[in-house]
Image 1 (cartoon, rainbow, N blue to C red):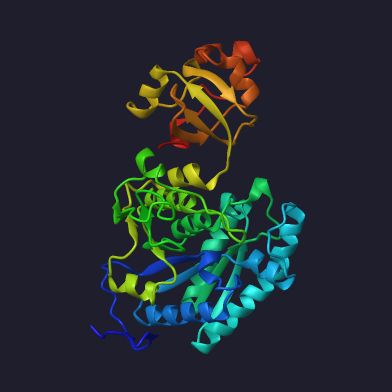
Image 2 (image 1 turned 30 degrees about the vertical axis):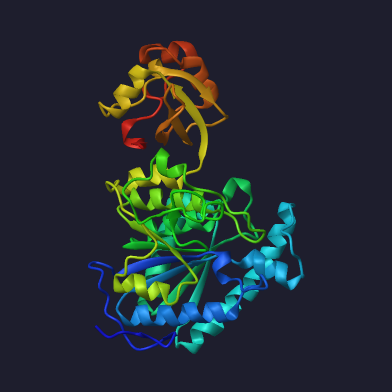
Length: 384
């Protein structure tokens, strides 16, 4: 292998030592892009471009998911605190996205690469036709040797159509693009057993086999004025990617040549191992749709759904929470309040409230019609 890190500079070529690593999604947080003054740093973006150049030369395709639009807008208007009003945030994103992409374009051009911008809202992901178009666009850009740079369309997004943060967006992109690895560049070294800012002796967890309740308790949100998310969102992203058989690695974004080192096979940061791969349709149900409500089920229904792979019938439902319509995604909780499944409901929340506890044969008698016997059919449900 040819070593490519010499005297702190990136150059030369490397050999990808990670078997099966052909395509990666690299998510770059705002905190990774800002300099000591709190401004987005063109030098840092240039450094990322250099690393992407080396990785691409090693035969690994790269898709970038980058935050930073609102931070660029704040810098342009000389703001130090993110405004609370959604309309002002959207305006900042509109201003800042132009500045952000200009920096990416200039940095990547110096490394003889072109970039293509893709801005998304959650509506683009949950709509199958638009999502297929996204897949085709990503594949075409990569085939043309163009690096896709993706961001949430913050200028248009509002609560109902937001991904929430770019960690979750990057997990969705990893699935849509059939990536082999999701690499999250963060402002921390990885996942720690306790908050390292409060406990300097906290131990970093090198490998996470499963994102469970114990792991979730270790996470803490960010306090940054220019970014959103934090370790909680990274755990959510790792879980989503893992359900599609994609490993996730969280690393310190300012580590020298961190992207290159990961591709070379260095075991840095925290690696989240993938779990059992869900079928694409099941994964879609679990993660591509926004949850609109909840149904609480009894122990008998929980056994039927979890252990016996059955559909959810009205007889096992205790109550419905929230307001949802037929065809929307809802969560299924057990009596302890744990989400055990997600699925596409055949009945609205008002209908579910009327037929809860009833046998399927009594649905039509109660509602005056019967769409199906199941509130959630097994084919439209994923057990989590």
